[in-house]
Length: 111
Image 1 (cartoon, rainbow, N blue to C red):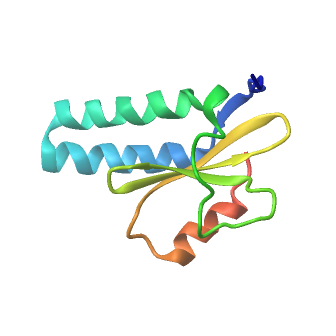
Image 2: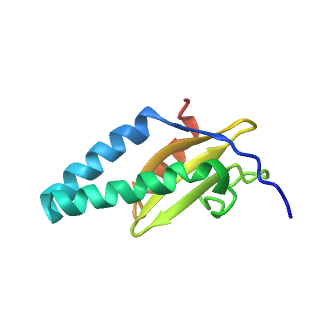
């Protein structure tokens, strides 16, 4: 059995801004309880990346030979993260219908 190296999970400031925007939208459209539930689901998936970072597929809009950019598909949203030597960097959460240009800006996010 292969041992997966546990890595620290870091969240970008842009991800925090995306979550606030997503919560505000969800609260207006679906109500506070549904919005809180969805945000809780997002965070449970993000915090599980410490050991499950290889579970998700490479982000097709951010391809690299080392497959360091990956995404979690959650309903109509993509949670984009980067695998580095010592940590997992959660970069953004975007609607899956976002422009490819907007998705590609995730590469420039520094944590």
